[in-house]
Image (cartoon, rainbow, N blue to C red):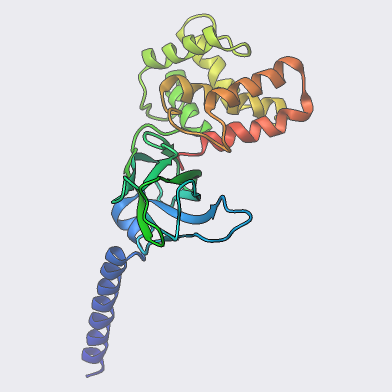
Length: 294
C-alpha cells in the first residue's frame, strides 16, 4: 500500500514539474534558456521635453509587458513643442542578437515628426546594453488640446556563429596542428591566412617562417608564460581580439562603446609607447570584447 502511494506521489510531482516547466517556457520564466536563446528588451526609458518657462504639454513613456515596445503619449502639445525619449536596450539571452529593425509606429505623421537612433544591424552580446534616443517634433497641423500616441518597437534575430571568441577558443585552434590534444574548427590554411593578415596590419605582431613556426609563435603568445606579466596578458588578449577581427567575429559588436578596431589601436599604442600604467586597462578591454560571445 505504501509503495503504491509513494509511486502515485512521484508521478504527481513529475507531472506538476513538467506543467510548471512548460508554463515557464511559454510565459517568461525560462523563455530565454529553453526557447529563444537570444532576446532584446527595453530595460529603461525616460521622457522629457523642451518646455522651460511654460508647462503646458506632457510626455510619458512606458515599456509594455513583453518589453519589446515603448508606448509614448503626448498631451496638449503645440507646434514647435519637442519631446525626447531616452531608452536602454539589453540582450537578456545567452546568444548574440542582431537588431533586424527599430520601428516607429506613428498613426499621425501629419502632426508628429519622429526620428530615432538606428540600431539596425547592430549586434549585442549576452548581457550587453545599448542606448538610444527618439525625438518627436510637433508640426503645424497638430490639433490643440489633443492626445497623440505612438510606439517604438524592436525586433532581433540570433547570431549563432559570428560572435567574438575567447583566448581558449583560439588557443585550441592552433594546438592540434602543433601535436597537442584537440580538434580544430578552423582549417590550417585559413588560420595561417588570419596570421598573415594580422602581420600586415599590426604594429605589434609579426608571424614569420613556415606555417608550423607561425602557429607556434601564436600559440605561445596565447598560452602565456607560467608567471605572466601584465604585458604578456595584454598581448594574449590583444592577439585573440585581432583574430576575432580578421575572422569577422567582431563585426557589429562594441564593448563599453568601443569597436574592436578602436580597442586594438589603443592597446597597440600603449604597448608601442611603453605606457605600462595603461596595460591592465587595455587588457581588460580586449578580454571584455573577446568574452562578448559568452
